[in-house]
Length: 202
Image 1 (cartoon, rainbow, N blue to C red):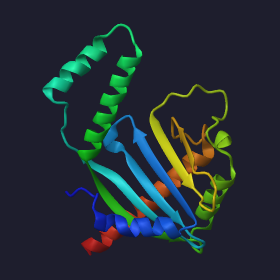
Image 2: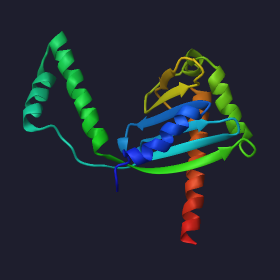
Image 3: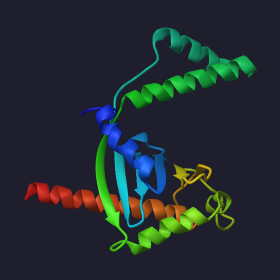
């Protein structure tokens, strides 16, 4: 397994990001981190290029002995002050960096076309015109039990403000449009992967 952060790999993605009509990032984080996955979508007029990243494995990592002592002291503190909060933020960011450095992915690249995926294009167009407050507002009066945090970045370019929002659960009844969007993107990517693997085995 190889880490995917290489200049060679990033150059074509940077080129796409500069020339596409819309960029959308989806990051899905279930309670079990090993089940996480993400998408980078580059939407053009009649084509969507998708990068599908699925966690393959997470290597072991830990704070060094001195950091462990400090973290233990922070956890045991009974009162929070500004210094304590700053320290917790610092070690949380440090932990996030270590996790990222030790997380390995499987990556697929695919394209879908408007001529064959009209409903999928319509789904994205609906997402782009609806305000964030509507997209993330849960439907019904059901209590939300977080189980899969899903983060979105939508960049429509052309001077429009980049949008950042999230939902706490993938549930088509609670968050119909966003859940359908994630589920259909995932289904398209998995179908592509299955076809590719079948061809490789022939």
